[in-house]
Image: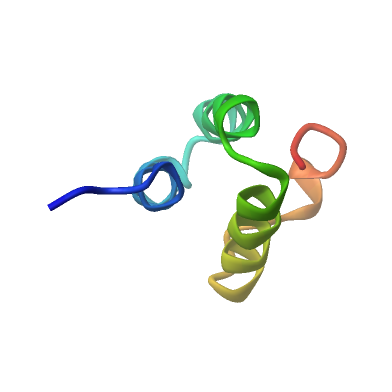
Length: 61
């Protein structure tokens, strides 16, 4: 079974969501790899799941 980078980063972000520093780091890495459409999808997923906060604004997406 093949996993997309989008699915990979969703799993990673879900696991590091409690550590703001690691969360920002993983989002920055995702931004380098994902396409614009995948980044939008990741941000929407984070918003739906309560993982995107004001602390991330400016540092991510």
